Length: 158
Image (cartoon, rainbow, N blue to C red):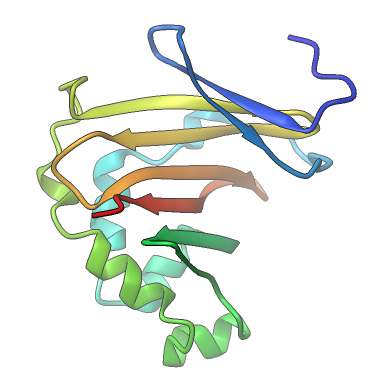
């Protein structure tokens, strides 16, 4: 697809159908993504439920945003301060909303799906969609310095 002169992204699900369109600022990608480095859902669920802020931080993008009930949570202090104090409540929010992820049946397409998000000037992102059984509805991974890290988490509105 040719995205010259645009600032939008599209997601295509595993069935080849358009899943969503998102308008974003443009970004210049710095390295080619290695799809073999996408973490398994089981690993992500386990780390998101870890009691260690350092463990959770290891899978997060520095500019992570968590969208929950018309509120956005993100780091607002240095990562060292955040790991030690959770002053922005990113880690606490992740632990709270990640409950039940270990029970998601990733083989059931009515519950779980994985997509790609294409954006002009940016590497392809990996997107997990959870349709039922968890508060989290979407986890977006961005390729940063040779690893896929969680860039966005969106929850249900109820």
